[in-house]
Image (tube, rainbow, N blue to C red; front, side, top):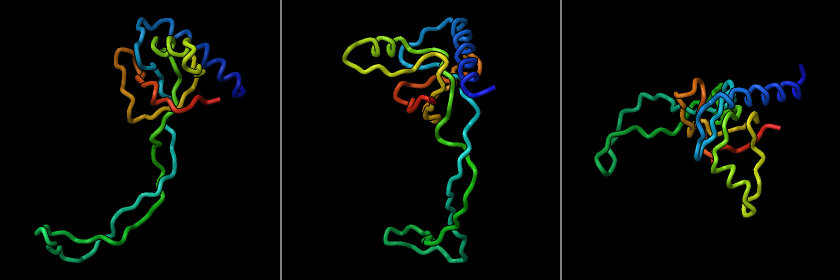
Length: 140
């Protein structure tokens, strides 16, 4: 199955699921998160020394750390992809007005959002509430 067919299937499935969700949301998108994206990040940790703590001018005892160990690790990205299940009615009103340019986000679209700002929505299994300003891209 190619990528275009997968997106069509996701859209159809999302529309079907969306029609069964009894809630309308005011300000946030309901999103089904996809698997976390793994990225490589440089992680720095202080090098351990045998140096004894010294008091500074405020009387605080500490060891000045000047050297760090650096390693590249696979970690979860701060951003996540997800399938839009519900669109907030404030978004629908906003994009219908002439003063704001329309943003092309529809049910079934795959979006990229800031994962640390989203909240689990426990009234609908395996979903998250994502604010409009936390969606940073639509996957094409």
